Amino acid sequence: MRFVLADKNLVVQGRTFEGFPLLINDDGDAIQPAQNWLWQVLVKSGRTSSTKTWESYGRAVYDFFGFALTNRYDWTKPAPPGMPGAIEAWRDWSRGTLGLQASTINQRLRIVVRFYKWAVEQRHIECVPFDYVEVQTSRQPGFLAHVDTTSGKVSSPQVLLQQKQQTIRFLTKDQIGVCHEALSNTTHQLMYELMVRTGLRQIECRTFPDAYVFDPERRKDLRSGQKIRLHLDPADMATKNSKPRDIDVPCDLMEKLWAYSVRHRQGRANNNRDAQEFPNLFLTEGGLPYSKNSITAIFSALSMRVGFAVTAHMLRHSYATYLLWSLRKSTTFEGEPLLYVRDRLGHSDVSTTMVYLHLINSLEGHLVLAHEDEIDQLFASTLEAEPA
Image (cartoon, rainbow, N blue to C red; front, side, top):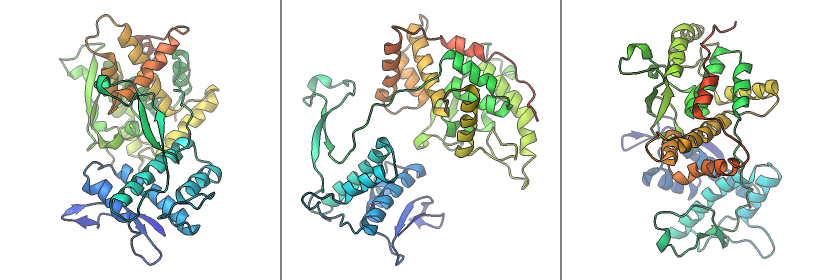
């Protein structure tokens, strides 16, 4: 059994489906009905267009069927009395042998559960081979809470693992400053600052287009201290689920990005041996775009230097935490702070953003958080020449 991502030659009705997951058995045929389900849920439903989501779904189903076939589990039948079935055995193998986290396993399990429910609807099997249990959710009450008779309880597949609630890890104001000073490479330092002050994800930062950068001094409509609204278009860069959103870039940060683009970026671009051109603002010393692994390596080295853990996503958490706190304390901000932060982060559901509200509510009693302008002051120094 093989897992393959289709190339541009997969064309259906004039549309190219490059990146679509293909599950192929040893005879070269598609693994059915799993392949049909992937086509149905990822393409025909029209709900998912992100190739990253396609790959995530494909790998989960491939992993499940590969395990079941290798270990001779019949996915269509419930477990014998006192024995695990295919999905339970796969779950336990993922946890015990692979050592995956419960959150990762549950994410894959939910995909396979969706496949099983579809298989019942299509009459490939009579019933799903697992039970459901009623669980209490911690989701905040919604607009129609007054007519909701579920009391916050939902049915959940019993095969899912219990997950410990993840603690949001963010940096204190002092830690933000320490990390910034510890980064001697100008490119790394500016990527760090961009993520801290705008909430960009690491993939968004490393694919941030050079074309988005301009000289603020040439804009007569801008004033010192103003935030510049930028529209992130998934046609220009990578965004989660290929969704567009707007971010607000401090004017002084845009000045630094412009200076970097003019003074440093072209030199790195010229180092590309194959004379390749890339739209990314940030390039490696070899003139190539940064990869996910290279960003991970940068933050691993940074953690070693400063003596505490720091990841790219912690910068996003820090941005959201300080921004929400400062907006709630502001006497001049007009609007709903939670919705503003939701839009800047690109969350599809405000309940996701509310985790930061719970965090600052728990901290305010014993920890005074910095205002957003205090964070800005940490980056007041001008852009210096990059060391060799």
